[in-house]
Image (cartoon, rainbow, N blue to C red; front, side):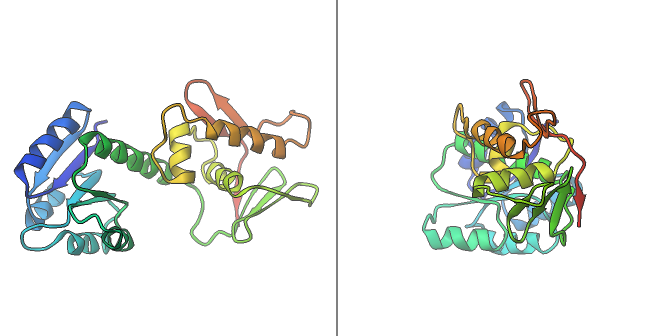
Length: 237
């Protein structure tokens, strides 16, 4: 389905350019020029992501972002001509999912929108409880607080930080096929570079460390042309 993007921006030229580009790339787009128009659209439409300018007439974008975050989990990308680091930090601290300084290209905005929507989709399917401290599967134990992995033989298995993050990402979503882009977004929080192969390398290393029965058990299955799937059942405690 086409994602529904809400642009909250009072510059008509930017609205026209960005809306036209997003619509040409399979997005639905609604436009609001200030906070009250945004509230009306949100009350009547299902919005998948908000692109929010900081400098708006009336209520400013930071105030709007803070207000939205008090009652909603809709992803928000803040855009602003104020590109100093402090503005970006403030935007992210009050709940924005990303921050893009003006001037920006519509192509870069679309890439960031897609990355955030991929993360939102797979995060909605995670099985871990907020208060869970361990993930267990097939005799293996992942300690989320200690960031450690224990084998069925009760031995500690050394993992790099990237390997541990990838294992947790898989174990939180058993039975779900995850693409390389989704895995990159979830483990590294960035838009994947073209022909990015780091996930394949990490999967290969993780498979070797989980292989205690000479390849008889396939915990991470390759799904051709789609990605990877974590096969075992996972228990949370």
